[in-house]
Length: 283
Length: 301
Image (tube, rainbow over all chains, first blue to last red; front, top):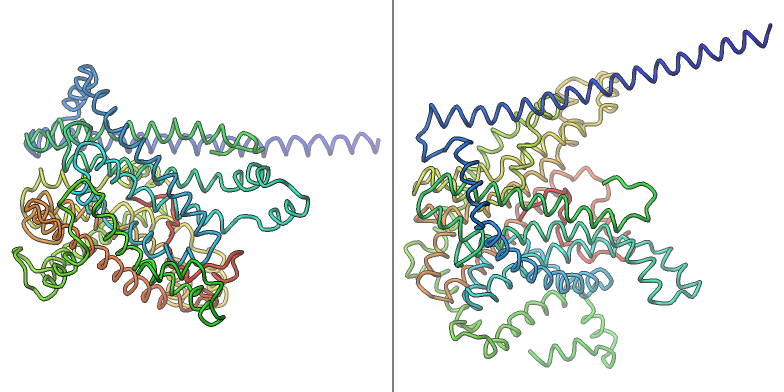
């Protein structure tokens, strides 16, 4: 008898528990639903606002209707202009960013491990970070010309401080006890680097790459706007000069979509792959 | 110049006092300046152009500018004053618009869902785009530069205010209530201090991005200001002018960083017990801690 009452008590407890569980789940679901409803409402509101103001409030050349832009974007993609100009810009970014990465990591490691070198570089790194990209673009283009080296140098110079700064942080936060342990156990220098330092630095490096990359995009585009004969920035300038708002907005949106795709999909996939050794990946 | 560099590399043979002098971070900072100017002077013969001026030529240009002896329509003081006025006006407007929106987003989840994606797009938008759009919409008027600043900085204000509101320690507010602290007292001593780091983040990133947008807006849609003046020298093919102005920009940024942010944040965070000591307890000990790090994930070029 006593046993049955206990079991009954237990089952009712369990039922209550699962009820609570279900309630929590339902609440979560409602929460998610409200999130999506409000988010979609946001999109609907802004696109509606755009449509409304372009039809009733302002002239078409000030703000073309969303459909006009979509049409224009379709044309840019179908005529192959997109691939041509994105390729040109991407190439500059790739080379410039590679240089920035190598130099930035070297300087960052030096700064992180040595106070003297930190003092040596810190003012310049700070200055390079706060100086508007335009300044570097003008100077780089003036020294190295418009053709190829100028834009690449501009990208490298603006991307460099972001990488250096993040690496300094990483090195400073490196687990000293693990380093000491590795030394005590006689781990070889290469193994130490491969299995202790690099895995630890990886998140910092990825943050650095993210920052640096988003800056590199902007600067590469800027160089082309100032002085270039191909690339996204060049197309933006062309649309600007011919005062074609539809063309301008289309290029901006395409630029945006592409940058987002590269960062969120391509880079993120690399990051996930790199961190597959971690038990839980929450990226 | 070269002899000092050589000495710096081999401090071992020197007496202990001199050695300490060389190893002092201050020496390193001074030396980096020397190395920069020296490297500049040395690299000139190897550059593919005759255009590049020597440090002395640029120094002369800058000195003449500082004495207001210039060919450009605006002296360096006028140019930076014009730009600064636009920046402050624009950022003030951004604060006025962004704070209420940020408050709403921080307090009500639905508003957050409604606006979040658009704020993120605004954060990631290159300031170049804002500058070009403002130029196309408003033309060569004062307003287009100011509007560029507003557009480029308002999302930073919004996101930071929203984060700050969410981070207000509710338990401390409750405790204040329990201990009978007045509303004003609670806002002044709990809510305000906890909002401050976020306010500073919005100030730093908002102003930085606004400044970058402003310079571009001046290049494309203005006939005055620091950005326009550097463009003036660029169009005139005067390399001293461009590099000189580039250095003015750096000096300006450094002054703002040191004087405004340094002073202000020290004053606002004076209640923190160990803001200075914290640095030295880090594993490798930061030297001076002068590198300002992007704390939020939304730092921008």
